[in-house]
Image (cartoon, rainbow, N blue to C red; front, top):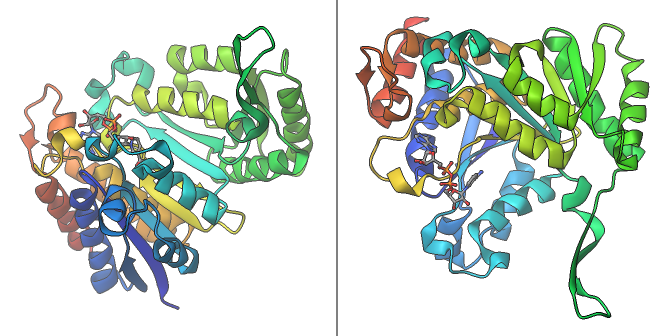
Length: 362
Ligand code: NAD
């Protein structure tokens, strides 16, 4: 059955990198029998310019109808003077909430060909392949009470509330255990159970859920130690699962171990594995329109979509192979140029090269 994919290019480099992802999808359609139909819609600043709001009702309706959503990035200086409630980034939060995407999967993979792009020593990060599973719809970002109040003394006080219910912890734990089963079978749960009751409950529930996954070895770390271990010896981890707040911080830390923001995709999933797939980087307004952006994170987001929402792990493997091959062939966009004798290519040329490798496998 043909699957429908909502395509949301967004702002800045978004349309440039999305064009390369579409090229890859078209190749999979024409040459590899992938049955998909793409429908494009507006989000972010582009949507504000056309309709006055960052997430038009049509876009959310399309995303809800779709089998998967492919998003590039939103935002830029043009829309920064707007009120925070109608900025492009609100479109992103709105679509995540509207689709009930509670699980954020962020792989941090360092291809051996890019070992010199990391700020850490090559032996510490070479062949790094870890997956962070971050809870996305709970925690201190959404808990009440919240806000800034004025005390009787006249002093201001800021309040946010860290809150998790058992069911919220159970469903993210299941996603993490299932991901670990498909990988090396090791899951490390991150909390601050020594001082925060919310994460004491987190540890208790994750441990309970783990009983149903005997093939997965579960360990626990406090978040401060986890941050230290990620920099000291990141290859000790296979899958990490954590709360929204800790995941926000640790996943950025982990992505930078690879040194290349233009290389990393992410998936946000709902309870039925319907997902939104997007690069972890933003809209990079500083390089927009110049054909210098790296399209590989966007193309690897297509691979994640093939694996998690379209059940085509075979094609996901092919796309990931093609990305590795173009790096092995010495092609680099400017951001991953490194020190070697590489051929620096444009966004379009990088996309063409990936398609070329895919076609050569026919
Ligand atoms: P950014 O990720 O857009 O850019 C940070 C730096 O990385 C810039 O120097 C940029 O040129 C570079 N970079 C990013 N992606 C690249 C790529 N594919 N190839 C080569 N270089 C790349 O972060 P920022 O500058 O903090 O934010 C810019 C805008 O993006 C802001 O409006 C921000 O709100 C928005 N943003 C959106 C998302 C999203 O849509 N998911 C995420 C983060 C930031």
